[in-house]
Length: 213
Image 1: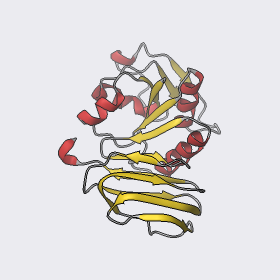
Image 2: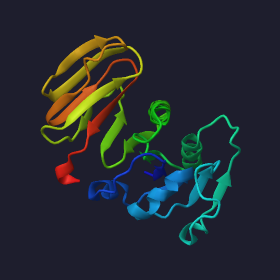
Image 3: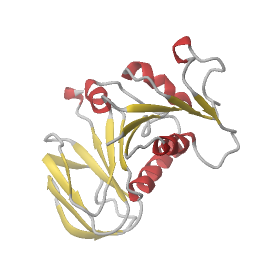
Image 4: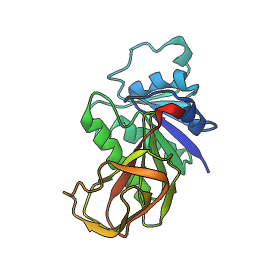
């Protein structure tokens, strides 16, 4: 598999676990996401965006990175451009770093929507930042190796049908839920969990354990 890391401008805590998850991956930075490269020990091969949130003159260590500059008046986000660039370079799996937290909630929402879209197109997608981890759900049962006591939620982006959660404090079996339900907020893993759904759009988001960061 060709694994790419997409560096975005949101929150990032460079934990040993996060660095290990990114080991061996190729990297592309989106605008100010480049600031995460050093702390994560990554050397991006491409830097894309409109560069409205980065210094006009990059640090010497970044001066040689190939840049693709886009107008601010564009119809794609910098993160979207970076993902498309990774696909163009042969990615079949991407990890979005810095996608979840940050000063703008609309950016985090956009990254979750992008994750769902590209996952539906067959791209492997995960969102990691050292504080939380998120994964689009699909029709096949999927195992998540969470530690006992880990808090997690299922974020719905539509009505969902046949949602099953095994191995949690509050399990569910083939439950249909409207988009407006918050029943899947703040569950707790008893250990590894298995999640699946028959129809709908949803993302699992889990809190990383600070004791093992």
